[in-house]
Image (cartoon, helix red, strand yellow):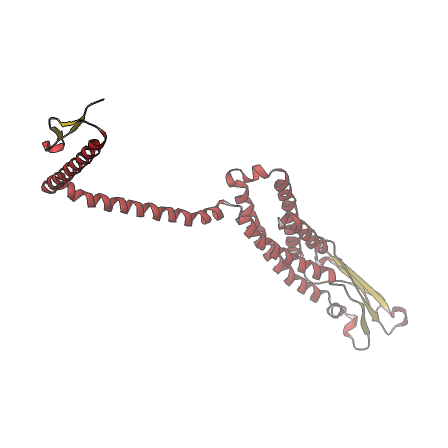
Length: 303
């Protein structure tokens, strides 16, 4: 969201301050001849800083004629590269703003929008860094090439000691310095925006889900180990026959005693509540493995 608000503004400031620059310097040549004394020479230059095409006329004090001179250096490649990155970054920021506001559902569909946005943001971050560094170095070279002292050395008349040459006006560099600053501000802005775009991609979500899945996998493995240990603990009891028969006989004898105690308890209770009771035939309780236990049953006459 920070890119939506600040990126177009700083991109405009970067390429506008560089692309719209016009510099002006002025030197004065004072010849010994009164006719050619106090000659002011104005030199104008600007974007894209092809200084080898900037020419000016300087007087020749020993003759009544002038010479045509050119500045040194071609710095158009770095300047145009910087402005191009700024223009494309501005256009992409506007496009991203429209997508974020009006096409949010399509942007998040199938996770393609965040991935494309992440890749483009990384590319623009690198391009801003490269163009800003190149432009800062080129700006230093432009200042050197347009220094009035350096320009006076190009004039043939100023090489003589009896001729006085001075610089009356120097170029203003505040606008170009601001453009270089805005370039590095864009670098910080786009590099910082990589994290916010990365959070919208599936890579960040996968990294957040991974610890949860591992914990669930550990829980399932522990549950399987418990089930396996319980099954292995119960398996020896089923494999041995004598232990099973002993356990069955013990359960049967215990069950017989409980039935006998319950029957005697019921008989004592029935003796208090009913007038007549008699013992019937013994009932045989059949269990597994053909083991039987006999015990008396109490029948109560219905009144």
